[in-house]
Image: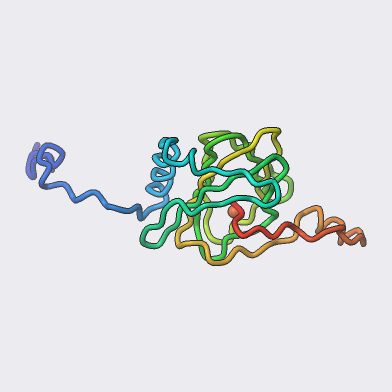
Length: 177
Ligand SMILES: [Fe+2]
């Protein structure tokens, strides 16, 4: 019996029949792949990293049609506060150190170097460096991040429910993982 390959030929054996490789990612898995390839290029990002104890440091590493790539650093104790990402989806990749992502009611994910999280619009999380060493992470947002609404932390919600007022508002960083 003839298979499609027998009828049409094997396109993998005839390079000019293959569709051109896209210059930019357009799917979630392709964005995750872009993040992995950028993460592997340590010489491309490591010299750019700075640590700032007063405010979380971030640097726009690259832009493309409909997406942005950011490099962030986190000294121990720095965190984003609970937030979503407006209309953006994203890929978070830890490059160095360890970050803790808190989602929902007490769910925690320890993210070591190489770990990735993918999220859609509306996803709420709180990312913090709970470790004793600085951390570096790579964030791709598609479309680019234009809005990052902050959410009350679960601690604040609990304190309000108990009639207590939180001591301080949540951290209002521009980028939050
Ligand atoms: Fe985030």
